[in-house]
Amino acid sequence: MIINIAICDDNQDILSYYTKIVQSISTVHIVNVDSFSNSMDLLDRVESKINYYHLIILDVEMPFSNGIEVSKQLREKGYQNEIIFLTNYIDYAYEAFDTYPFHYLHKKTLTVDKLKSILSKAFSLQDKKQSEVFTAVSKGETKIIPYSSISCFEVQGRYSVVYYDQSKSFEFIQTIQEIESKLPEDTFIRVHRSYIINMAYLDSFQGKDIKLKNDLIIPIGITHKKKVKELFNKYLIHKLEQE
Image (tube, rainbow, N blue to C red; front, side):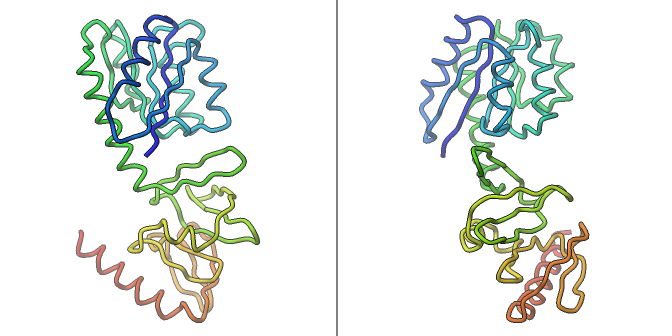
């Protein structure tokens, strides 16, 4: 698996030091590291592909915009992955809580072994997250969407559309067979030659259609109807057994 990491610190010596440590980590992952000495350059880089970096390591004390402010902007733009703060002052930790950092590291007491340990944990979390998300790419933009946020997929000619977060959608090129092969079978089901739904969003059967909880109306194919009802009943029983 590929792990893309951004490190941002206005001190060039410190930036080089941490970049070398990250690159030296022995891991099964392919690790790509980009270094930024200016927070504005980092924000510009992620503008068109907000979740390209699986991990962003930010110095808190930087000119123009400090690391905490940068992290807030990243979250507002939709950044969903891990953020690690580096600082000389532990007092900033309280200000960082709202941005849900993965870790907060004190430069003066940070050892190489400690940093490698934290990064290994971040890599493990990313492994888990990437196995529970759907990734769609279109025109240089990458969307990383948790399965739990997706209501359905629709094929429109050469394009497919994923509907997520109640009212959002994203268009990309991929066949419905390719999409279906990547999804967990206990949650997603093909209901039509052009549609796959998340059973967690199924609200009701309405004749030849299915109504989803976000009010989308999805046609159900004649050849799929019986199987969909059977699998949905099994899904409900499984959910009840978990409660």
